[in-house]
Image (cartoon, rainbow over all chains, first blue to last red; front, side):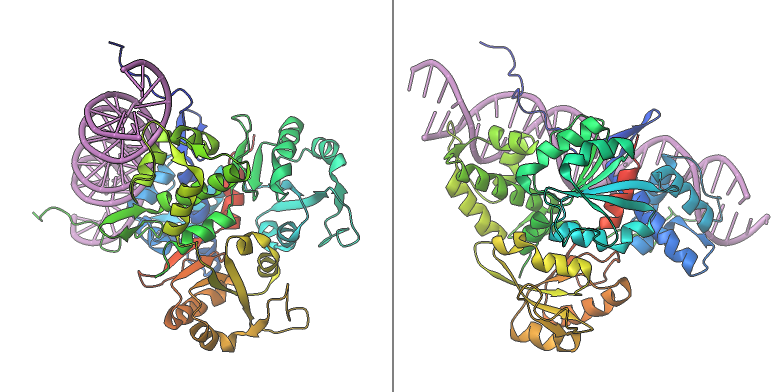
Length: 227
Length: 227
DNA sequence: TAGATTGTTAATCGATTAACAATC
DNA sequence: TAGATTGTTAATCGATTAACAATC
């Protein structure tokens, strides 16, 4: 008789969407995403001159549960007034600080194909304080130079510029074959967050955070629900 | 004394990412997404002439747990051979059938801005059997006509064409203000799945499935992890 | 004060993982 | 047959929701 069977050795699923540590508490990735949703909702309220909001109202806006809103916020402090609710502008400031978007963040985009170009043109990021000021491609063509005023550099310059400009966040829109190689170089150069549009699982050290945006998967899994 | 307090009335969070019913079983949305990931991994294996795969190997490719792979598949049937594993090509066929991507699916794209154009040019969807053959915009400009061979129609023709061509799936890349109005028309015209790039929660009947791709949120929540 | 809403603990729900008998 | 791996049940883990005392 053998002892109790040990679990498959190669079987520790390291879900990349796990959680971050803040001080002592672990913050689930889903909480961080919702923080960002709250920030946007608060922004809309502010635009409409609404000055106070309850967790129930905020939750309602977003189709969430009010207890979840309060609990999410409780990870980071006490921002509300019992019997009253939250001051919109104040809470928004707090959240922007927590998210680290109360400052400008330098961003590079790598891979100036169709999608890359579109993202360079997409105003949404800039509005949020992200400065996409460097683009890279293996080919620096006529049609590339200065897409939307963003200069396009050859990838050979990647490592140097990332370091010199201390770029922390990178948008990755290269072909699948190139992705891991680029990721390795990015990590070495000090990048610690990647918004990855490439349908490839990137192997990176633990401290590097990757968000996968997988258009093909979103699309294909939608078709499951047709009719 | 009052009775036990009832929960906040406006507080039933209807998470749009919940689950679908198939026959009797409820299929979690996360399972459906993974099915699509499995399909892609199997495709890669096939390309490399690999003919068999175990749940452990497949899970390893994707950073998941092998029990999860087996359990996900078990929602839909028994596709493996105990002691052997899965036949790659066979399993892939099964999954494509389950996902409904073993046929061509007509897709329309609404809102031909920067992002919309990029998605029209993006080959990934077409490779998967999605035919984006109609684009719509409130303005039919020179620069629009026939973006990547896809004709651009005026939104006034939306309802008619959706119906006539029985378009089931729509990619939505319109400005936030327009999104809900367009969604209402889509639903009336019979669309049952929307890939929504607009940062707005769409109010639609239960049978309509929406996947939200929220670039701003992905980006902002990444900045939480910087440094 | 009375009413409202927070922050937080406890209860519930659901999803992931371990374990193992069945079986090729 | 012996070894491997499935399908599935039970155990664990984590996230969501309910409930309510504290408090403005």
